[in-house]
Image (cartoon, rainbow, N blue to C red; front, side, top):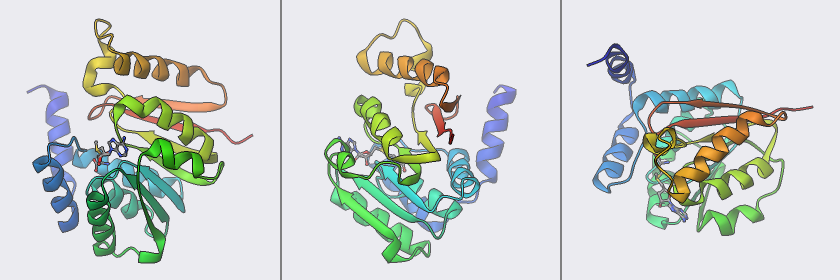
Length: 210
Ligand SMILES: C[S@@+](CC[C@H](N)C(=O)[O-])C[C@H]1O[C@@H](n2cnc3c(N)ncnc32)[C@H](O)[C@@H]1O
């Protein structure tokens, strides 16, 4: 095991997940859905707390693992969750309530983000988590940039498509579009973008307030 792998394992082992997070993790594993490492979960809590987020939207919630990590960092935020599966959203709501979140501050919307996001007001969210299907990640990011407020942040999971983006031989449309986006976001003067090679790749963007 490399030094980096040892560090990753060490950091994962230090993170303490709650009972509801462990249930959500087990559900994702049993459903064959990709999910986040404990290290990335703790990072999401940090981002939510450091950005002082009071209005959060999550695109692709599954059973609430990422959601409860965001809640950990922003316990008074209004959290809007979008997913195609109503059962996943019921689990997410339950996990948030178990974490102590006020039910009035949880909004769950069942549907395709491409149908739901155009109805969201622009310039109105402090933090947007993009975590649904990768095939539509570029479109979800376009909406995220529209609905995030100036100075707010966008975080996108699996932005390096599990390592494929870094391999020039991989030219499938999803990987190619993510490769182009990662390059493009780094070059936009009104955005501060960072990509961390953690889990499947974590893209973080802040729309600079002028
Ligand atoms: C990778 S999982 C999300 C991971 C999760 N946020 C976690 O805790 O790690 C992707 C989620 O997006 C949802 N999803 C995928 N395609 C979708 C679509 N076209 N419309 C709405 N939801 C979709 C799935 O139901 C699934 O819950």
